[in-house]
Length: 294
Ligand SMILES: [Zn+2]
Image 1 (cartoon, rainbow, N blue to C red):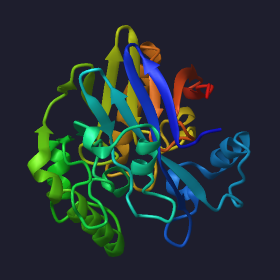
Image 2 (tube, helix red, strand yellow):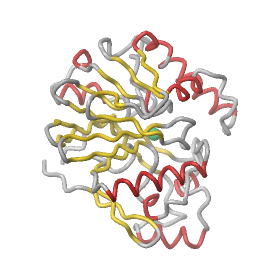
Image 3 (cartoon, helix red, strand yellow):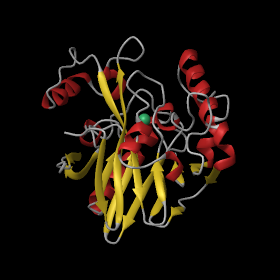
Image 4 (spheres, rainbow, N blue to C red):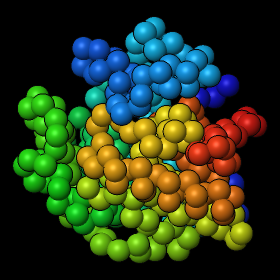
């Protein structure tokens, strides 16, 4: 099974989920996965839910997360959503080679939407030398998000080492694209058929996207949920959320919308290709991954 690129159609739009690789979250650099992903979960309930997913709390020592970017050819625009992590980890930074395998060169891309400023979403903006990797693209980001990641990051509730790392990666990947940048401050239509949705919480101005062609809908939720268990337990939030309560509100709004519109959903960190539908289940939702046809 191909876990690098996955092509699908949305109305007349030709889309491709493109892997940037995977990253392993494990101690000592990160808390154990369950603590990292479900920071506020009551222990007994957590153990029970994990068991339903064939996971044991004590034995679950690493979370191997995919990083999944999205390419959309609308016919008029070739749009990339997020640029992956670059050289952050030994198994990341595969976006360009996977795009090439899919017949796309960096020069072909005319629009890049950055959902937020975390290093796994902006890390491919520049190459190893710090030069823009997508010379012909107009970059689009939410204004408050841009401003935050170009600040001293004082509002981040992380240790100094992490703050310095995030700041260094933002400095490497954001200022070099400034001359290619369009900032938005409302739920604008970025290109025909792709609309920004304010989805704050994970970061100060995290952005989701509503993509539509004909009657078909795709909701790109980026990091509003990091793991399928966040759908079943929408009130459980990760340790890294900028504003945990806001994450919960945003997530519930997006999932309700996805279910109402019967939209296809793309989640950046879910098992490849990160595509599926959500159905209501008890107090939350259930993830129904698509069946990969190729
Ligand atoms: Zn992420």
